[in-house]
Length: 546
Image 1: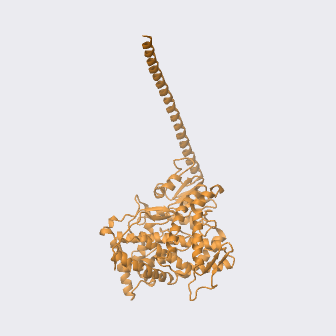
Image 2 (image 1 turned 90 degrees about the horizontal axis):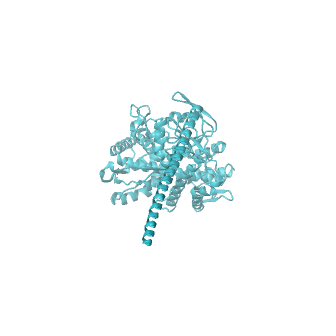
Image 3 (image 1 turned 180 degrees about the vertical axis):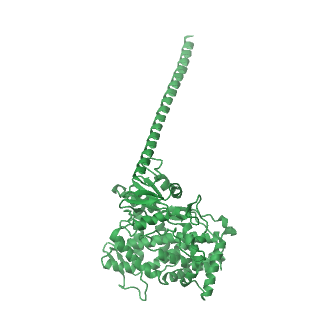
């Protein structure tokens, strides 16, 4: 009996203790919820007060309107870095010509109107770039002042000389005839394999710039080309992260970040240095950065070479102590990297546009054939360009739609306070602000046929009329800003345009580009940003001989 009472009491105690513990847990949970709600309320209040404070402060200062970002201190970094296309489109549509926004330690302005862009970059002469380093030596793209003037002038010597000659056309024609056409005919015309323009466009673009630098195109199967193109892809992939990192600390370049920057991009730059130097040292040049040596092995330009090659301009500048070999190599590699990446990505996109819009392709082809027949030509030549209005319109329209530098590649920095009028209101851009050209929005979300009214969707359709006047003659459109504006525009744009004219003038006369299964709607072109916009995933099309 006593044992039974004892067991009953222990059962009762267990249930009592369990109920008490449950009640206490509920009370504690209720207190925890209260604490969480209080903390959440505090955070929300802080965010609201922060938002109100900075909105009022920016308004009083006359700064352009813009987002502050959902997360304090980070600013707009998650959206700017994570979904850049959406951020660029939303900023232009919501805030208009100027968008003022923070990225951690930097203040930024996004310029979404071509008139305002010209006002800032040309009239106000915002030329300088922040101290953004992707190599141990600052290249042409990021130096300022007298150094930039000198190095740009050296590059322009080659650009002006080659752009005014048949050099580009002859080198592109040699590349297509000797290396591209045999493979195209065998594998893609006869064999019927899908043609992915990326590899071929990269080879043509590479050979074009390599010829401008060294005067010698390389074979399609030359092992140096895939090594270089892969190294450039890796460099730009890391470069986009490095650029975003620089924006977060306002390009103050703290030494604490050196190991990270080495891993992200500097080691890739060194890899390209070694790759190019090794090629040059086995192809008639002497390169030694430690001893500051740069020359042709025989001491003279190649026999019969009449074109002013970039390498010879750089050799002369090193010998005259205007540049160090490290400076010369960084500029040489920058030109090769940037020209290869931008021209190849633009070309790839335009080949796909031809297959996606067969009626436009035939219109351009018919104009080419008519002009060649009229001038007694069997192959495309630059001298008929003035008669090719639809052809030039297509090239520029392809550049507009592809927009391979959606935010102007590299920002500029306001080294002084700038005040301009926008939509009848005075706007103040403070010293130290980083300025980005919203090329993506200006090219794709402004209706060029309707006084630049905002569009709700990205304009990816071909509009040849943007580039043709009332008489169907070619005209430039002032909304086009892909190459930048002002004195710091793209130094190689004339060579790039000549290359594109040559590529499509020659290739379109030889081949017809067709969508798989003759279904243009199946061609879907998607881009990702790595400083330069790339097509991902690659798209294949069919090729037919003309």
